Image 1 (tube, rainbow, N blue to C red):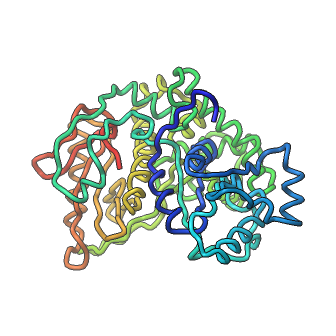
Image 2 (cartoon, rainbow, N blue to C red):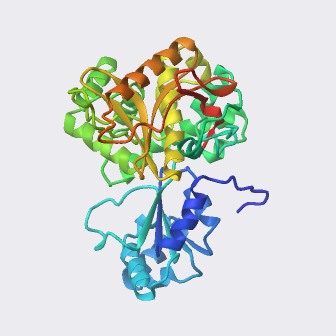
Image 3 (cartoon, one colour):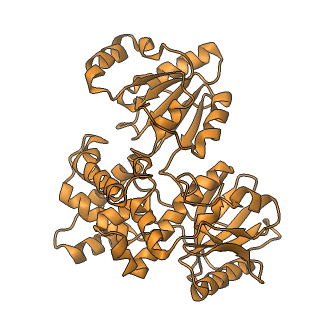
Length: 427
């Protein structure tokens, strides 16, 4: 670590400790620049940087002829960007099997493997898996943390203070994103991080992920369309239509699917699956995924907009704030053994997010910028959905919540719905 570096605690720190006690090898995946290596180094006792260009030839030789040499070092040994040498996976698994010890290796990866069949064993029973994302507001120090998601599932609600932010400050947080290198920098420098990320993505990463050339111009056009469709269940045909509306050149369904698969492999997009509850009504549930980037700043940079632009466009701000809230909810939910889903049925009743824990408990959550009108609209949706759930076949929701962008306090409405600013939330 460089002199003067001060590590900011991440939500996955505790999960990494737990997985090192439970599994022989731990896989930490997520987008580039989100902090995987830095977080892993806090618990690793030795490290090898497999993307080091000065050692690439030597590493390639050892990977082919004597892969065990790359594994020598104190445990846990961090194999950073392991996917550059896929042989390491089976080699690590072999050591774990023969030693019968836990906490031997941490493997970090910013992309999925380029081809299937490069490893012979999935690692079942040997591997603990962790997904990292850019920093939540709690991790970056921009949430008071007065409201714990875990405690909401386990106890009575208590009113609390938020780290109050103006709408213009929320716009800045959306555009800056949760990139660790942006935290604490001047506004101009911090905002540059997301643009640098997108530039690297469209010029290099989108091609390197599977050694398939993809046009920079087409990638930028696709990212802009995806940004405009944040929070929707838009099919590929809608993405093509949006691209065509802004440019006469269009791509085929197959080509767009290839681009999207590459972005998923890079952990740039993280769509949200549909929730499938037991309902009293006969309304059919829409199963399409909801479109999201892993961080709202990617959408802002793809659209070429900044905080001042968002202040003039409340509609776009609403969608990008939702992306930021989803990012944070995913981080907090996974720390509580949960996942985040969305709901929409054939009657067009929607719920932005459902936080569903492994133990079967769940919460219904709407995301709004704030203000009485929007909060009342969100409350109406939550109450309608709650009435549709068949509680003879599944649990009633543990709580209903509206997450807001602005607000000084987290409080409980007379109808029992919690109103919680995102800047008050933590795991």
